[in-house]
Amino acid sequence: MQRGGLPLQPYVKITNPVDELAVSDSYCFLGKTYGLKNTSMRWSVSNTSLATIDEKTGVLVALGAGKVKITLRDMASKKSKSIELTIVETSDKSDEERAQKVVVKDDQTGYLMYQGVCYEILGKESVGVVDYYDLEISSLTIPDTILYGGWVYPVTEVYDDVFSYSYDLKTLAVGNNVRVLGENAFSGCTALTKVTFGTGLEEIKESAFEDCDSLEEISIPEGVTSLGAEVFSGCTALSNITLPETLTTLGDNMFFDCTSLQKVKIPDAVETIPYGMFTNCTSLAGVELGKGVLVIEAEAFWACESLTEITLPKGLVYLGERAFYSCALHSITFPDRKVSVGENVFDFCEELSVIRTTKAMADYYEAVFGGWYEYDVEGGR
Image 1 (spheres, rainbow, N blue to C red):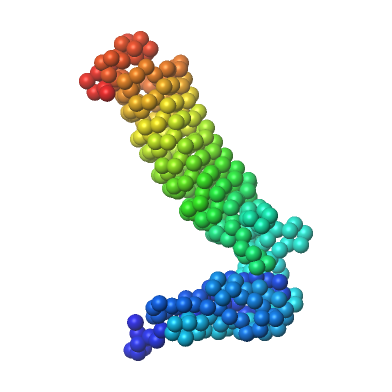
Image 2 (image 1 turned 60 degrees about the vertical axis):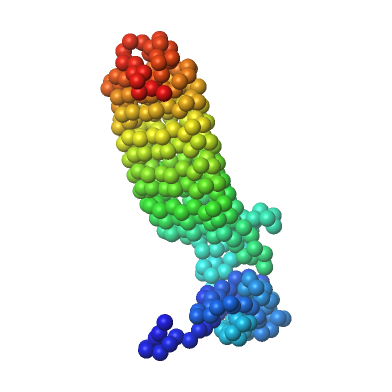
């Protein structure tokens, strides 16, 4: 690598310098080496009566007013980088201004403020996202951790309703320690187009992304076990979703009015397709039901006007009433077992002509559905 025709010399850099902190502030300095191998990085501070710094993590706590030098040194190459930091008794900047760079505690609420978002301390174990003060926030990153008072708090939860109807929010990145997204957490965020989840997520609660009608695709990460009722209801632009194999629980009306959704694969660990799950998914043309599905509840596929065929899983035991009401089905395949069937399962399925099953089950299904259909045992299982 060269600059101006000369070889670029290896060096050490502090990548997130600040020039001022207030007494009692905490800050995590970050550093990087360029062109060096087998490095051993250490942080130090020139006056430990004014500030302390963890030599390995770069976490600094401001203790007293004055000027100190912060140094990052590679012990192997002896190369280093230093910056000067001023510690003041009380900053003349507003809390909102200071919270863009360091975590600030609001005296009235006790919440921690950082980059437009408020966090509630949950003991010494973690913090949860409780509110936001940047009313025009457009890009939101929920960090893995928050540093305050020399203590590192994992961010583990986004509370109910926190960002609902944040009309300017366009992108969202969820940190790796967040386990739960609360009810209505991002509902009505009509400008939201991109969501990236962290690796620690376990549950997305009811209506968390309801009416996010600019969201076109989303991938739920492995580790998530539960999606709440109406979690993506009204996401009219959503055309593609990936569900993880860890998923076990789905909520009622999960995709209600997702009129652009085209194809869904249900993981094998899911046992129940809940009430109204795909109601009015008018573009849905392909559904692969997981091997573990035992129950399809009432109105699960109501008005799926593009769904022309479907194969029911081998273990299915119950098909709820009006499950395929007003669908575009031409054919449906039942398993080699007697599935208990609710009333009016195929009401207004005017194109349905073929019910596929095994020879052993043909008489059973003809008794259930009558002579309106052709019972194809050649293509059955």
